[in-house]
Length: 137
Ligand code: CMP
Image 1: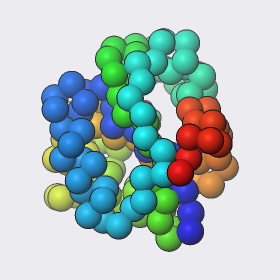
Image 2 (image 1 turned 90 degrees about the horizontal axis):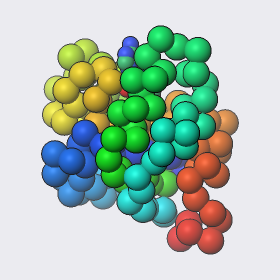
Image 3 (image 1 turned 90 degrees about the vertical axis):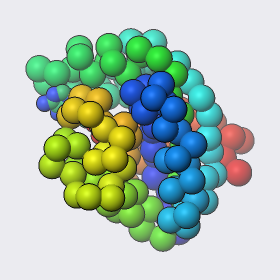
Image 4 (image 1 turned 120 degrees about the horizontal axis):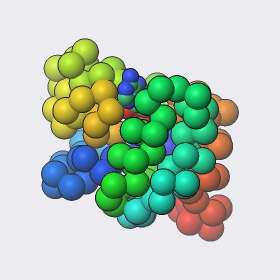
């Protein structure tokens, strides 16, 4: 079993897509071992995305991620990191395959509906950034 960190971002949450995305997560066979609704500050969003701090889109990214509530989750399954990334599709919804979450619910590369860890080390950092051990059931 492997765990990954996932976010239903403010665009998808505000558009009312959280329930549909959660249904697809359960249908795909993930266990949701952590789940909460949060509203990040810009500073908290910057800490989460610190690896992108030198990128030109960093301030757009932190501003968007702090623009409203989102759902943060820890998902568990065999090969959870890859499985969740495949479900999300390409970062840019315009390039994402049919049937992926970003194709169905994203509207631009910045407003792409969902986030997922890209590797085991990032998953460990991201899970610990948002969840205490006692919150993972
Ligand atoms: P995510 O998987 O959450 O990880 C970093 C995010 O940065 C990414 O999704 C995109 O939403 C965002 N991002 C990546 N490239 C760009 C870009 N060129 N312009 C705006 N946002 C971007």
